[in-house]
Image (tube, rainbow over all chains, first blue to last red):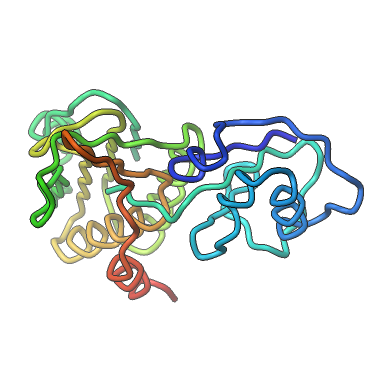
Length: 83
Length: 150
């Protein structure tokens, strides 16, 4: 799975992108967040506050209960501030 | 419908001419231009960098335009959103809606701007000589977008 980070979350994690091999028990967006948070203090700092984290699966907005699969592109980013 | 995500500036008058050329069914064209504002209270914004999520940005903007076209009888609809380094006073976003009558063009324009502010994946980083900060999303933007929900 390709995982992307943008803006403040990218700076907190310390990378723009990583490729991860999903453990079998990671099936939803919420599972993925919990698993990523356990990977490093930087991940934890980036993803701990759910009000600051938006998720897109394959470039569409996703909710915590939505499914994720090994081939997905999953992006994490703060609430958007364009326009 | 046209959606462009680009680094370069745009020419509002030229875009408007292109959108309405040869179409005498159009009775109203509403043009919205968003500019980089120098925020009061801080030490002054020297430059702003607009980060985006290539691919998703285009996709989300197209989805928002499709939604507007389903809700209002539009003849034409154009959205241009810039990214990269910008300075106070620079143009960031252009939304043009055209329709036979003004009400559809006005309403669709407000809808598009409200929705793109809360859905299109862009993030503003403001910098001056001493500090840098990511702009935080505003609750008032969420409220503005919520009035179009149905």
